[in-house]
Image 1 (cartoon, helix red, strand yellow):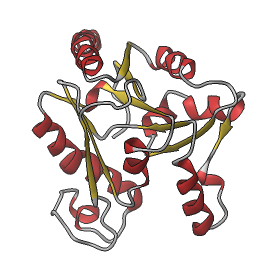
Image 2 (cartoon, rainbow, N blue to C red):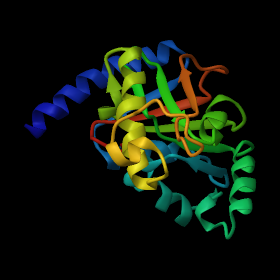
Image 3 (cartoon, rainbow, N blue to C red):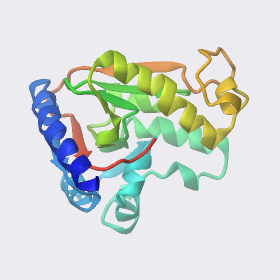
Amino acid sequence: MAALKELYYEKRGKILVKNLLSRHFDAVYCATREEALEKALAWIPEGATVGWGGAMSAQQIGLMDALKNGPYRPMDREKCATAGERTELMHKHLGADVFITGANAMSLDGQMVNIDGTGNRVAAITFGPKTVLVIAGMNKVMDTLDEAIRRARTVAAPLNQQRFLLDNPCSVTGTCADCKSLTCICNQILITRNCRPAGRIKFVLIGEDLGL
C-alpha cells in the first residue's frame, strides 16, 4: 500500500510542479523528506536571516534544526521571553532574507491556500521577505481550488486548533462552525495563485504525509 501511495504522489507531484512553474513559482518534487531537506537548504544562502511561521512540515523534515546548527541567522520566535518580544520579532520577519512556511492546502492546478489567526504568516507570503520557501507534503494537495479552501477551513484549521485549544467551537467539536470568536484562528484566508516577482515563492513538495 505504501508503494502505491508513493507512486500516486509522484504522478500528482509532476503535474503540480508543471502547474506551479506555469504560474511563475519555483518548484521541485522530492520523494522523501531527506531529499526535501537537501533541496530546501540549496535555496537558503549562507548567512541569510530566516524567519518562519506555521511550518510544521519544515520541522518534520529537519529544516529548523539545520538552520539553528548551520551558517544561518535564524529568527526564532520561540526564544522570545515575552509576548511583546514575539510580536516585534514577527514584524521583523517581514524583512527577512528567507521566510519559511507550510501550506494549509493546495490545488492541483498550482494555487495555495493559507489561513491565519493573526496574519503574520499570510502577510509574509504576500510581501516582504526576499524569498518565501513553502514546504508541503502531498497530502495537502486537492483536485480543485474549492476543495483546497474546504480542506484549509474544515480539516487544517480544526486540527491546528487541537494544538492550541483556544475558546473556539472547533476546540470542542473538531468541526468548523464558521465562528466569530475573539480567539478565532481563521481570520485571514489567502489564495496565492501566481508569483510576482517570478521565483520569489519556492515550493519543496514531498511525497509523504506531513503537517496537518
